[in-house]
Image 1 (cartoon, rainbow, N blue to C red):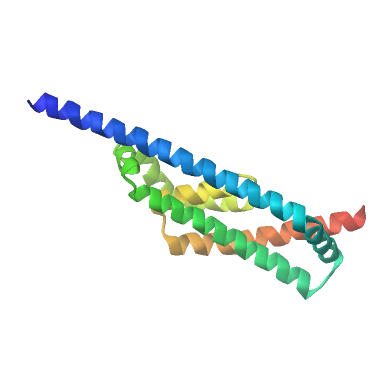
Image 2 (image 1 turned 90 degrees about the vertical axis):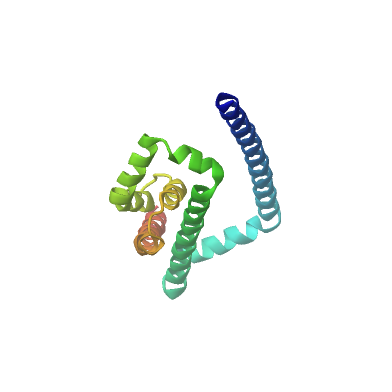
Length: 173
């Protein structure tokens, strides 16, 4: 009787897993289609306007340029924090609890909590996938305060360095 109950539980978990995955794939496709549609609309109706603003501010020197770069750095940091919260939410989901019980996965989480700050700094400053590292940070329950203390200044500095290089490389051409 016990073996039949165990088989029933496994079958129920597999059915739940399939339903959960199909549901998440469906909503991911809907979200991607929505993002593409919004991007197309913005590009069609406001693309020229944004290009003109970018060209004007590209050659401006002063507080306005610095303010724009600062705002972009902060917005990028906040987007990273949203990915962080997504990872934190996934950790509490039922499917994640099934995966977390694997010993190797737990071991990687412990390593990430110990050395994750290095990976976060690298992702915030290099072409490593920043959003993915933010997501993983949230998933492994990295401290949100520590995460923000690392990400915000590093990301802002990266944006200032990038803006400086772009601005002066165009003037030299």
